[in-house]
Length: 162
Length: 104
Image 1: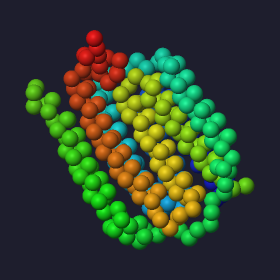
Image 2: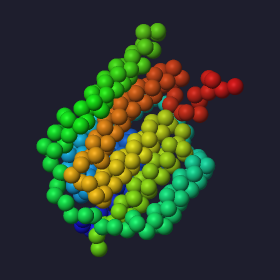
Image 3: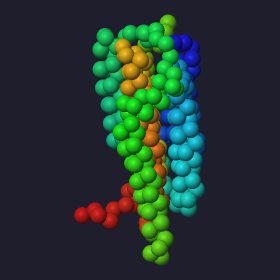
Image 4: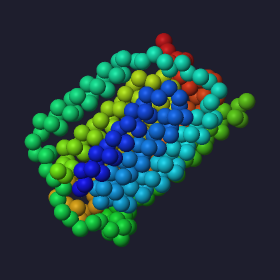
């Protein structure tokens, strides 16, 4: 695993995440979120999970980011005064990060390099989706259908009342 | 020097903490959803990292969990954004401090 690629992706991902969390304008934050998703997908490619990286790009950048941008455009008319920094949130986030970092750095068994293996093919993924994971697959399909119908109903109902 | 498991875990915990920061410190509802998406991305990264550094790469368990988690995250984003739009129609704002109808 190339350390130069690792560092470059780390810088891009974390700066995009910081921008998404702190930029005052919502549309800029949504576009920085796309950078974060690209960075995470690049990590998936680096780790040998190419299929998950592709799914990440299709689902997150193709669907979720576009959905967020559409919602921003639909709820555009209000301007939330978001200037004041909420220090409670900053302190909690820093405490969580400090705690996680302390635990990770103190666990000595984690300092291992990646083992050499042959790559996982899409054929294997498809086979296990159709054999071992067929019931989870059906359940996820059901959940997605119900969630999308529910989202439609949530958005439609208010319109009928008016 | 190669990237070790530790470095990946540090990256994903940083991503998680930034998502937590966005969720807790912003007042705009869509920013909160963006923070949740960041935390979910960190969790997915952890699944893939532990699968890659574990001993059984031939069993695609981590990959499967990550794929299902991405699907659930897509459903969550759709419902969350629909809720934001519905609440916006009712209150004419997306500031979460203003959603206080149930406040005692």
